[in-house]
Length: 214
Image (cartoon, rainbow, N blue to C red; front, side, top):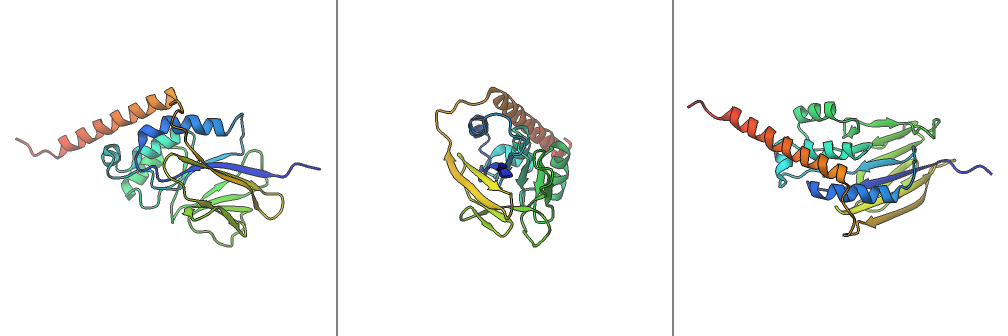
């Protein structure tokens, strides 16, 4: 009997500008996905940045998205997170998909060439084999061909496996808490330090440009 076609994913949400958490989060995600799995998605369900975080204010919400892209995320819910100017800027800076109410993302896993997967905030009755809604839900569930993902807090990682053989179904799901003793990944730590430095420089230049001539 053939093994069932499946898709695995990890996801975060509600990071709210806690950029210092990301090096540990990256280490933890690597532990949750041992080996190479070309069919696995890494997603963020939104609220990555928050105005209370200086780097978020300084970059108009771009800093966390750039960091998540550097961590290998495939897509993020950016609804309400960026104005039009900063959306264009971050779109040119990252390779991950930016999903909002006006923009979906079509994904074809390398190991599942015949599977059409749509990541969206607005599921519909379209032809996709599987739709993944990036708006957080009360619980992880499958409704027809739409996968809804349970909301998680900063410091948690959701993990879901979907069987795609016939009608999609949730094969397994779990919410994992980040152990406080998880070591930070040095590469991500360096990237975060660079992003914060660039955010301060960007803010300084913008403030200088607004100063009236003496």
